[in-house]
Structures are given as structure tokens and as C-alpha cells.
Picture 1 (cartoon, one colour):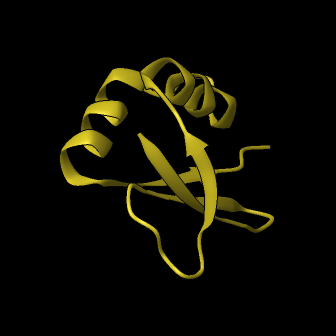
Picture 2 (cartoon, helix red, strand yellow; picture 1 turned 180 degrees about the vertical axis):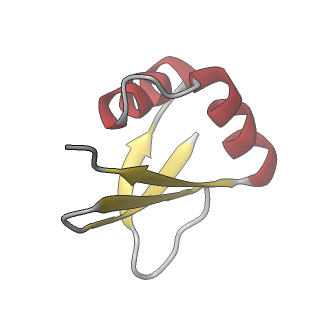
Picture 3 (cartoon, one colour; picture 1 turned 90 degrees about the horizontal axis):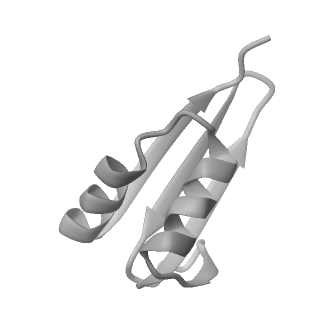
Length: 71
């Protein structure tokens, strides 16, 4: 599945928006299969529910992740 990404980082959190359609301010992440997408999600957060998030992006065509930086 072709994925475009918007990644915003601050000192307290990271907001990642993944879309299956091209958006003007998003960068092309690549044509990822489920395994590659799962590996990418794990690289963002090691305890993320991979199966649930892959199902969500396949169903809705987008996925927004809000990751809080813990100290």
C-alpha cells in the first residue's frame, strides 16, 4: 500500500499522520506491505498494537498517531 507521511515533533510529543492518498504537504514514505508497515510502526513505538493499526489504515485510508515523549 502506498503511504504518505506528515511527521511533527516537539519536545513533549510526536504527531504522525499516515495517508493512503497523496497530500500536498506530506512526503511519500513508500509502497509498503503489511510486514514493512508493521516494522515502521514498531520503530515509532515499541509497544504499539501493530495488527489494530494496520487494520485501521487499511479500512479508513489514514492513521494518526500521537506519541508522548516520556522522561
